[in-house]
Image 1 (cartoon, rainbow, N blue to C red):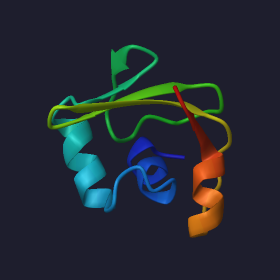
Image 2: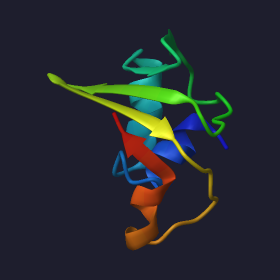
Image 3: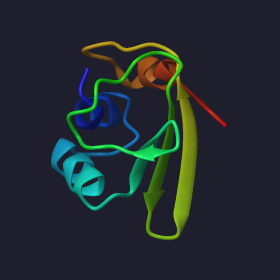
Image 4: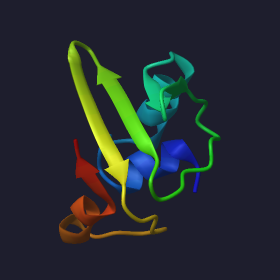
Length: 79
């Protein structure tokens, strides 16, 4: 699954366009490398997301095409 779509489906970012803009601006790192929105996310990846002065680090647990509000938090583990 694309990185921008994963951020949206897992509800780390509210909108996919915002996730795409964050990737283009270099605010999203996967495994300590800045990645583009088209990066293919896999279980075990470490995503570091910087929004303003806040930094969030998560480990990808599973990749689902769709998720409900309750199951979205099962897609990642906060570090």
